[in-house]
Image 1 (cartoon, one colour):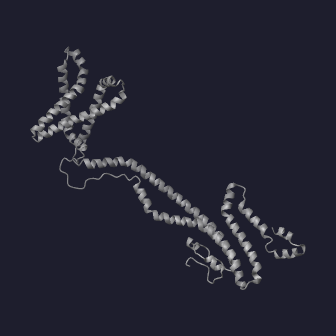
Image 2 (cartoon, helix red, strand yellow):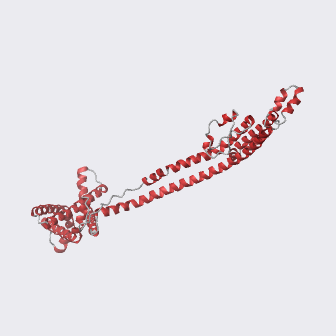
Image 3 (cartoon, rainbow, N blue to C red):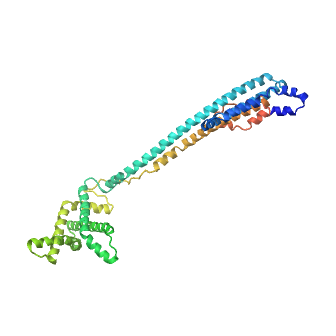
Amino acid sequence: MLDAIAATVPEEWRLVFQLLTFLIAWIPEAQATIFDFAWLANTGLATFLKRVLLLLPALLVIVAIWCTMLALYTVPFRSGRRDFLVALVLLWWETGRSIWLFWVGIARFLWMLIGWAWGLLKLTLQLGFKSLRLVILTPFALLDWMGRKYFQPGVPWLAFLLTIGWSALEALIFTYALMETVSDVFAEIAGVESRALMAPILWIFLFVLISGSFAALQAVAQAWEKKDVKTFIQMLVVEFFVMFFEVVFLYRELIDAITPWIANTSGYEVGFGGTLAMASFGWIGIRAMTWFLFGRFGTPALLAVLARETIAVHEAAPGERPRAPEPDWWRGPINALKAENEWFRARSRELLELVSLPVLQLLAAAVNCATVVIAARQAFKLPFTSLENVMIKDALVQVLRGQTGHAPTSGD
C-alpha cells in the first residue's frame, strides 16, 4: 500500500516520503503475516481453533503496532513526553495481559460449560430414576393405602381373598359349562357367533351373580342376628329366588353332565324333578360349605369395600383417617427447579460474563491503544472483573475531552 502511494509522489519527494514512513513501512507485510497465521491452517479443526483462539488477539496486536508506530511520530510535538512513553510501554503490558486473560476466560468458560453439562446430565438421570421408581412403587403404595383405609387390624384377610377367589373359580367353571348354550342363544339372536367375545362377558356376569348370592346370605344372617323377622323373611324369599336362578341355569348343567353316568350304573332315569332336586341339594351343600368355611367372614369385608367403609372386627380407636397417596410424578422435581431458580439466574449471569468479558477486554485494550495516542491515557482500567465495569458510561468521552481524573474502575 505504501509503495503504491510512493509511486504517486513526485520523484524528488520520494526520498523524503520514505524517510517519513520508514517507521510504518514494515507494518503491512507484518500485518499480513500475522493475519494469515491466525486465519489459515491445514485442517478444518486447526482452522477453527486458530480463528477462535488467535484471530482476535492477532487483530489486537496489529492495532497495538499501528498505534505505537503512529504515536512515535507525535513524540517531538508532545508535552510530558516521559509520561507519554511510559503510557506506550504500559500499553503493551495491557495488550499482553488482555490476550492472556482472553485465553484464560475461554478456558474458564469451557470448564463451566462442562460442569453445567455434567450437572444437567445428573439432573436428567435423577429425574428418570425417580420417575421409574415412582412407576414401580406407586401400585404398592396404593395397595398399602387401600389396606390401611379399608382393613383395620383383625380383619380376616384370608377369608376375604378366599371369597373373591371362590366366586372367580365358580364363575370360570360355569362359564365353561354354559358357553355352548349361551353362544347358541346369542348366535340365533344376533346371527353372529363369537365365543372369544362372549367368554369374558359371561364370566363377569357369573362372578357378580355368585358374589351376590354370598351377599344375600349375609343379609339373611344379619336379619337373623338382629331378630328382625320381617327383614329375615324378605331376604329369605330373595335368597330362594337367587337359589332358583342358580339351580336352573347353573347347577342343572352340572347335574345334566352326570345323569348319563347315573342311568348307566343304576338304570334309573333322572327326570325333571330329580334333576332340580339334585341341583338344589348341590347348591345348598356348596353354599353351606363355603359359607361356614370362609364366606361368613369374607363377605362383610367385600360389602364394606364396595360401600367404601372402614372394616374392623372391634371398634377402631379414633384417629386420623389414612390419606390417599399422592404420586409425586413431577411435583417434586418442579419444586426443586423453582427452589433453584435464583441459583440458575446467578449461574446464567456468570456464564454470560465468562462469554463476554474475554472478548470485551480485547476490544477495550484496542480502544486503550487509540486513546493513548489521542489523549495519552487509557479509557478503561483493565482487567474487567464484571460486566459492571463495562457498563460505566461516558468514560471514553471524558478521556477524549482531556478531563482530569483516573481511569474508571469498578468502584466509580
